[in-house]
Length: 334
Image (cartoon, rainbow, N blue to C red):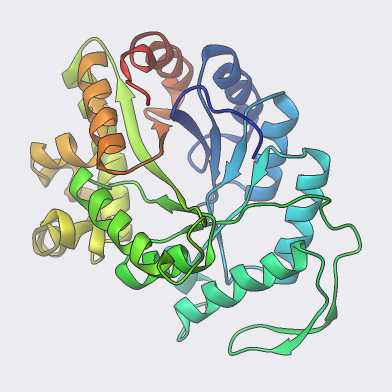
């Protein structure tokens, strides 16, 4: 992409954010010095393609990146068509992202996959080829194509990133994608470990192949650090309950405790029962100094950028402005 990211810190839009706040929050991000925007498509909150387009239309310079859409909820040909359309309307500002998605949410739609990683591989590689102008006729394990070619393909290269959590997925991202999105709940130890997996996957590619790593964080900042930390407990619990048994929890070391708390306390009781150390380590929350230190730790661990997911949602504008004024200036950049 040609856009220079002034700050390695961006904002994450979408999901828990009401759709009517997408455009004004995107404008706020551009006006206050954030380096990029992300739009997350979690089921069943806000649509990715429409949300990204709204954010791009509301801004002039910032890159807006879609992280992520599921490989199995739409056929790759439809995703490629959407991505090409957006890329042509907003040249050099849009980066699409593909992943599998939260298994529990896919199960709600009857989309559980026997070939999960194969689905992601086929989706990313076929979208890459369609965006590059190829016509596809082939039968894969998951997706098939019969003389599919984009009529209005992009006129320049469109990077594709992958949103992955576990070891095999991260290695796949290194192998086939231009970047990787790391999930919320990523501790610095997990980020460093994930970067090693991505590099291992990229070993078979050319020496100049790049894979830019971005990490989403559950975020709240306030002069009263305790207030900020209280604001993120429910969000941490929500995602721990959605993805309790992954390398996120294994590398951090709380997998067994999460599973046991879910068994004894249930998803509703997890926020109350979790230790304070999880709030400290699995989110970025606290005073401006504390937040800057935690973001810096994630960048040092290997993230090229950090996307702030603002909580509480109904206080997002104040938090975004406070972070821009008091946190961003404390971040050291290369």
